Image (cartoon, rainbow, N blue to C red; front, side):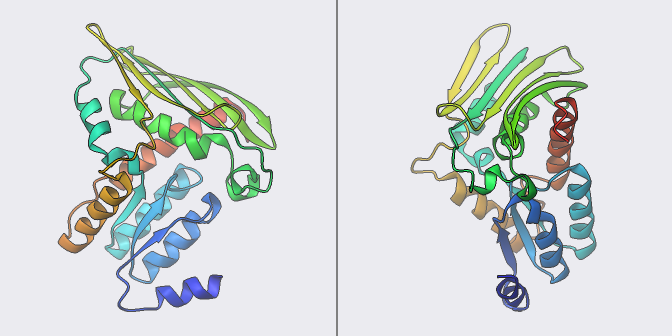
Length: 242
């Protein structure tokens, strides 16, 4: 497998690569691709932790190449329209869960970077930060069975807003985003995996390609990905996930 990946990176006519590997391999293959002069679209979460993400960002800067995290939901007009309509948010509630019982699944393998926090928790953290900014405190709890199967977190923000986040591998299908403001309560069902005629994956790839071809900054800057990883790290620490 590695030999095939290495051979791909040796091709001069390959300008960019997409890295969909398990979480524990994101940093390794991103660095290899950047060293080979390739632009990189890396699946979420960008890394295992903020330190890894910072190393990857430094390598991209040194190589003069685009590095972008593949958070496809942020490109869907439905989601963007919802976020643009939020005014004076006081409270955000975001949840993402689904049942996962196959212990052979990489998402349930600790050594591969498994666990609900990194897999679906990165979405709920991302959307809360998109709306409220950077939290100044984090409290979290988790239920662990080999990996974190369910994680709950309460985030507090400098303007006194709060967010309640939940991610799980042991629930029925669940996706929800609720924003409470002084004048309204807004709800968006299935905010993270909605597909229609405007496929968020296609929109994401087109945006990434435009950044590469036109030498433009990535729509999701790597600084945003690092900030998201920092909050995930805080949740991990508070929940004592190791």
